[in-house]
Length: 290
Image 1 (cartoon, helix red, strand yellow):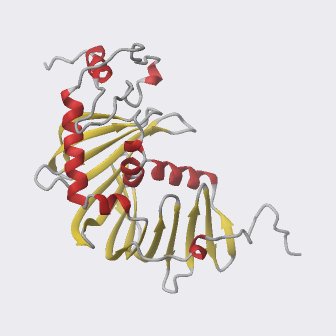
Image 2 (cartoon, one colour):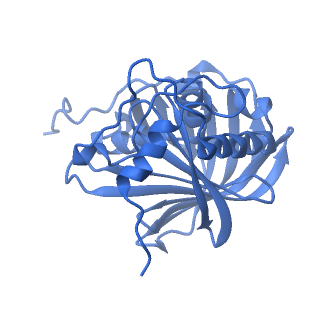
Image 3 (cartoon, one colour):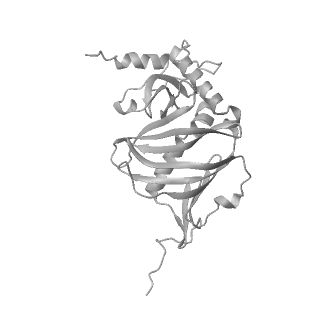
């Protein structure tokens, strides 16, 4: 029988993690997702200087190599992108459609637009914390549950983690060790922000490209834990960056969506009107026809 490492011993390593390799500023101690649920928190002593933790240094080194493999500053700093491809939906891990063609427009940090259908006349727009669906019936606000799911995914996206979390001196890096993702051996790192939210990234040790990103959360309705994943494949070079042209989203081990890109462009000029929407179809104020 394998001996379990005492939790407090693991936690003590997390408390000691203060300096990330590469000259990063000292990082306050944080606890991984789920620890706060048990009422156990770690806090560094005032004025104490923690020694560098080898796991944090290894995580930083892997993360630096991953960013370089993706395209370095070009990948970190692009502000707009467009995509075209085909998407498939799944229910309980099985495909539930023949796929739909889509056109996608994205503007950092919080705007996107997705058009689907032969005439591109079914549209979803997100701007800030608002979301809309545009159809032949008019423009309606997206439901609360749909927006919660979208905002949660955006808050844990690769763009948010690499561009926002890593700039915060309170962010902590941990080396999670070797693992398996998409049936491949990977090196895993975990990034923990100041709100004790974490994202784990599985990195290909040969190419240093990310294979999978995952995070867990508690459902606000039933308080049960869920895991969301994004698995990346079919990398191709686009404008000096390595971009995954196959992306699979999963939840609790089941596939949810899979999309294949046929075209991608970075830093194209996008009109602000793409992300404008005004509600014209509000069920709450709609009068019944007599």
